Length: 208
View 1 (cartoon, rainbow, N blue to C red):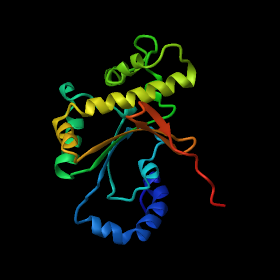
View 2: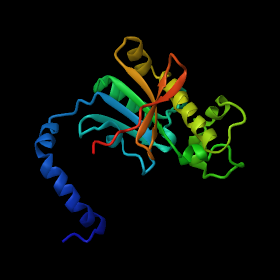
View 3: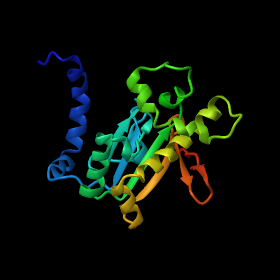
View 4: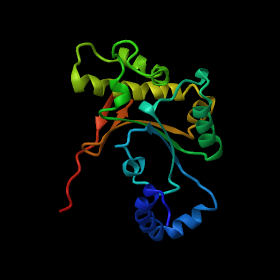
């Protein structure tokens, strides 16, 4: 038997899943045709498939600290490669930039100088302008939520610096979705461009 304890612990769950989804997984060996690119945070509390109600093959995913999209001139080729592959090759029709409540990356913004390791500090510079876009006087969770929302809109702006995204959106072939997910309630706040605010969807109602 395998000596890898993590492999052994995950085997039963994997077996149940793949036995139930074996037909789907065989179909997916012929290729993928997702309609959605999800850009979200690496936070362990966030599961994109739960947010989108998705199965394998439905969603192309890019995750990183604080759901960031550095602008094209930053030269972050890993991000650019994901966007180009999703838009040019997979022909996705939607890109979701999904922030979330209590984001640790966003919480670290504005702390005293040099609190973070060099790579984290350099990465989070692509979220820093969000702090300057919120109303003055906010405190605590209210301030954090405002920065999280501002950061999502900032990353939408960064997305549009990539020709693949900008051109597809202008042709009407791509829709960008700024979301914030509240993992304590399961609800999503979606940005309403006409109103200029994030609007929370109605609370869930128990079927019991």
